[in-house]
Length: 313
Image (cartoon, rainbow, N blue to C red):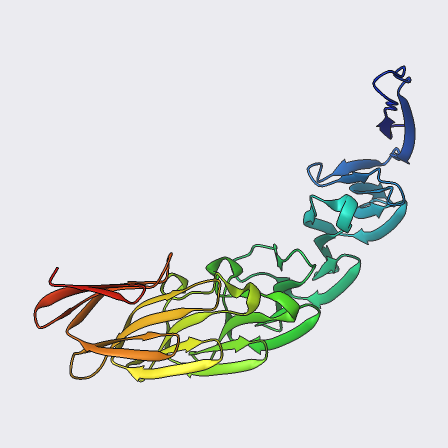
């Protein structure tokens, strides 16, 4: 029989003699078995946290089944295990997840808790990888009866006609259970921000026109349109309507700024809820590393950096 062994090398001190290496049997491969997903297995040798996790395929009773084995405890049998992932610091967190397929249904095993059955697990583009943060919060999407839903920390949200793939950066997790997701029902766009619903909107200006990168503390700025007018959603508030929203920026401290135009063609900017203008044109606005904007009035260019104005550029 094949054996998976761990090699324990004992080193005493700089002056001590190096002891002979010893090995310890942790799992014995059965004759009808092979290890699968070889890039996803972990071993912990820490005191009080010794253990291992691996995935195997076994031929039994004329059929092929797959299992997860964790510290000698088997999970399975499954028809197939897809793309398992185990935290790189498994010795500290012990965190893992995998999708499995059984009797035509999909399931998610998230650190020992199984969610399902589902007709499919997404996101919609076909990837299985959920969003997971360092604290173990998670978000994944699933298909049930031809409609998509979200599972966020074990709570289901949906069903919806369409959802957005996680790699669009339109879905995110924050601290203390905060989350933001986007979905479409009856061709209208909606956002759910930690239970607060915004919508319906006709369009969403994609993530590169909005700011969700600093969502750890629940901070976001979104650009949407309804009835041919533009709006900005920022940290629970809705600004607008405007003829157009041109530039948006935010920072990790919760600051926001955006520029917009109104019906007569003049421009304004909003900095943390305070409106400045009007201007003939605003060519740029930013919070990195400090607030700055460039605009024109009376045919001349002006630069405002952190409240200091330079004109006639």
